[in-house]
Image 1 (cartoon, rainbow, N blue to C red):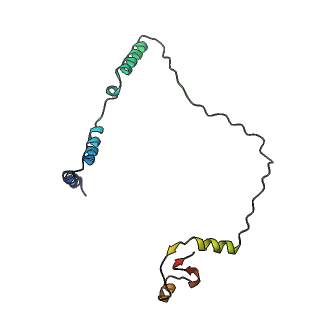
Image 2 (cartoon, rainbow, N blue to C red):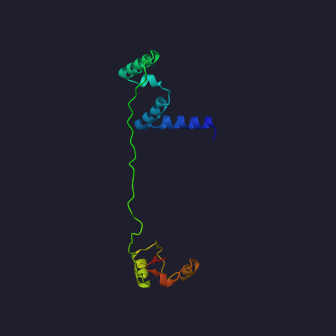
Image 3 (cartoon, one colour):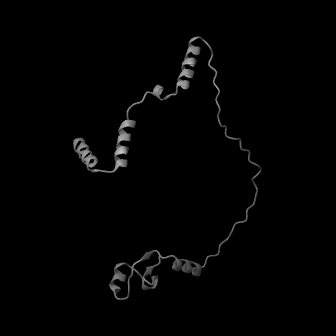
Length: 136
C-alpha cells in the first residue's frame, strides 16, 4: 500500500470513530512529536542556576560538581574448594513414568473404536489412548 492510500485509510478510520479515547491518543501522538526546546521544559529556578553557572565559568571560577555514584561491593570468596556435597539420587521406575503419563493428558481427540482407520492414519496405538485422551 502506498503512503497516500495509507493516509486516506487513516482519515477514513478517524472520521468513522466516535471513541474519544482513540481521538485523544491520535492527538497526543501529533502534539508530542513536535520538537520541544529543552530550555522551555525547565523551571525558572533551573534556568537561573544554569545561567549563574555559565556566568561563573565565563568569569574564570572553577567548576565544582557533586556526584553520587553507586559502587558495586567487592566480593571475597571464602575457601570453597574441597567442600563435598552429597549427590541426590532418584530411582524412577517404569511404573512411575506410566503413572505420571496417565495423570497428564496432552491431546483430547475423542476417538472411539467406531473409527479404527483413524488410529492407523494417526499412527496411534490403541493402548496409548484412555477415555479419548492420547498419552505420549
